Length: 234
Image 1: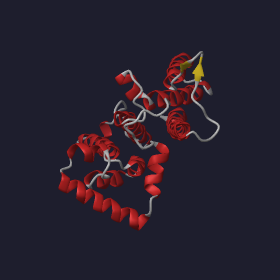
Image 2: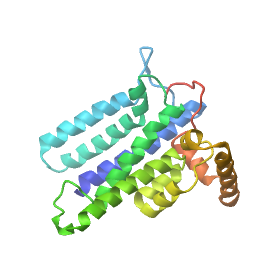
Image 3: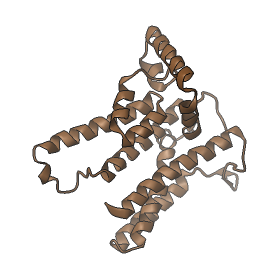
Image 4: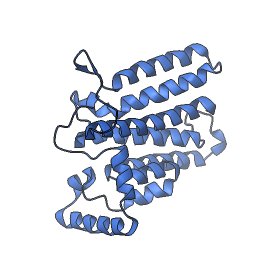
């Protein structure tokens, strides 16, 4: 895939992290950032994301691999698509669910996109000629599908730090997906009985007591904690 795809991946990841930090600061009412209002209309960041993605896509097709335009188009697509997927749940529901439990769908799709791009960067390209793999091709593809599913399950279970590490270290994602979810995650709320929820609460308390709250801080900083109230639009 080369440098353009690497730049796309890095710009996608950087934009997502920066966007979540900024929107969390806006939500808390701290820092220099405020909601983007133009003529009394709140402009969601998916709007410039669409424009950047289209510009990058058209540029990519038009330049035919010419440098540095192919690298520039990769950055534009990475930034734009990250902004779009960060508000995918809002687009799907046609209402501002950014900070609601439904808004976690956006984080799950971002994790899926990062997993897919990470696997491509590591050499797995389903569109390339992989005849050299022979009978092992099916095993590689199956492993990739399991890996992506494990990363998504980690996100669903509220293990954002594990999901990020698991993109690059598959065993981390597999172990995280197999273990109990965080007690207040979407997975726990939907699938756990009272007894299993109590087990999850006890295990989470033990983990937090041993390792502190660094992983929770990262999750809150990047993705933001969902709430049932209606905070300011992001």
